[in-house]
Image (cartoon, rainbow, N blue to C red; front, side, top):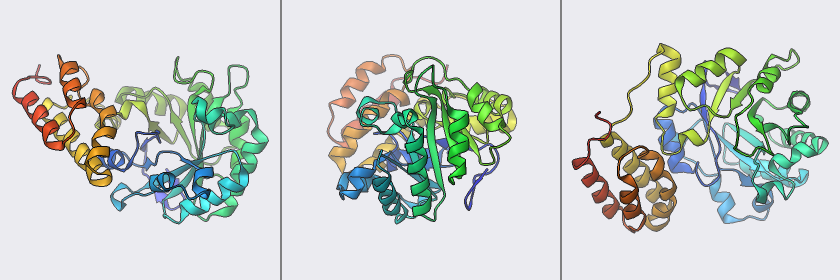
Length: 328
């Protein structure tokens, strides 16, 4: 799959943009473990044009993260255009527009998935962003607002007509949030629509190599995007690629490897945000890194009370010496 000048190879596996998750530290970890492309957390266009420091910082990335996309959201065409220009100054591989976020604080302000209720405005915003920057512009969205308005086949065509270079589709409506099962049939309809010439990326419920192969084979998508299944599990990218290439399932990482990667992640978080903030923001990842470990709930509670890297490292090293997780 090629987007602009970026060749992501055959059957690429991408890290989805996730608010409060896909910061620079996590993007680096996922790239180390096979993610073919990563995205920033979504950035508010209104905040960017007001020069909000927190939002501007979300756009910063290291060259080790490339290829990387900066994702922006908003419901005002002028603000989105100006935000795209600001984002482009960071020289990512592409600018992605978020038309899919279902959370109340975004959708109730008319942004994210809410634009699925106002397709003309969605198309207008996209056209303005495309005209404003020389970088490729892509879109991430959902199949519709609710069960009665699954409009994605028409929407994808209209967005292509105003210049997007790829579209990512999450197989749920906004009304579903993250519940139920993702419907890939409509993603397949978009991909197999003879009018669609740009890459179609599928997203939703992919958590293993066999599941990824099923989606590539059954629906013909150009790439897949992994979101929640990557939290605390950066190995998923290499696991999927190993299965796609060799039909082989990688063994689960043992406890020593889990601790090593977790500490690398924590180190990166501290390096980029300082010890206090890095430790606080790392807390959401521990449950994923040690999922299934007998007795980890108590250990996790101990970790969550610690305020220094050394204390956390000591707890995790004690965990290695006293547990056989992953070896049976």
